[in-house]
Image (cartoon, rainbow, N blue to C red; front, side, top):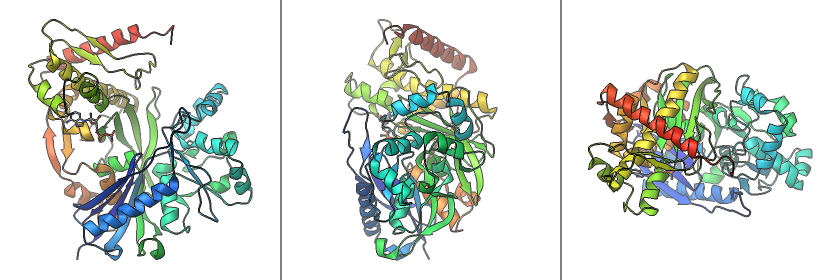
Length: 499
Ligand code: ADP
């Protein structure tokens, strides 16, 4: 008998439900975009009810496409945009304001104040994160500072805080369960990732009452059941994880040193560091990867601001390609980069350089340079930046990269993947199922109901293509040294005085 798992992948711009079979194969999927609200500069908000409606529609339509009914679903896995903060009234299930999205910088002032008071180290040590508007903590404080109802309801013990996973589970269970998993809790800035509990000292600093917080449950294991009245069947919810952690799981990065890189607009790199959290001095984040039956594993995370968006710029800014994939065709027309290096610091340099004022720069242009070299330098830059972050991860964790699994739009670029493998001198594996986030939620849910073990998943996970390093050491070293020279020159050009 077939067993089906529904993975709910609630993202920043759209929601998606994918139905998987008992071999981890995709059966059907449906996605739906929802509205983004920008009421003031820097604000990014979502309507939590709209998100819930979009998830419900996706669930119904994905089932319909697969010709299944809710009773055919044996488990649900949830993965979600991380850090986005919802506050609702537990009695009415109505959000008291829109959800504040991770990207929203409306809590910059709150963050600055905390940093000025000297709290950076304390928060970093306890949560693995940096004080930054991204994370939920300052967003929760914003609610109490700005929305009177938050204070009134908290006093009456009626207020609930949740990240999107919590909110969806609240709705799926018809208000029965107020929970989140360890991976999502670890993105809130109020969760102690060492002691595995909401941190009283941090809550006090942010003035957050404890009675609004969800219970923290395992990422894998039955933590709740959906309500029959809500989605037509009582289904166990047995997998929950934030999107990047779910992708790490979906890429079967189960061992220390296994890493994944998502090549999207920017890059998101996560490396499994095993049972001990590794703290960074250079801006990497420490996070809970997942917990299976309360055994917690950690990851270290780094991001790159500009990756696929540099390819978009070739298309929309320079008009030298019509489609992102053409960057590969152009790059392959050249035998070398002809000495051209591009530092795509459109919005400054992030990990591990941290130079906000830096701007994109090309180096080494001679008369023979064509758009082919420009495209090539752009793709190479994505690989160099990835190497910089991985080098830092290896240095700070003292853990060597084992394999790099890849996903995201630009991972379809074979030139980029081969160059990445060459410059890292590591094997790179690209999976058949590129929806690794949803796949991770499905895997967690499957383990959670006991139909799979991690070993089963390793066997089920299929490679689309493997890229092996074939570059000579000398060439690798020369190229990377030149990239670092380009970086230094770019930093030198940064206008620190007039910024
Ligand atoms: P996001 O989730 O951040 O929107 P996606 O994973 O959908 O990103 O990937 C889209 C990004 O990948 C775009 O920035 C696009 O320019 C880039 N991209 C897509 N296909 C290719 C390709 N074949 N080669 C290089 N870049 C690509």
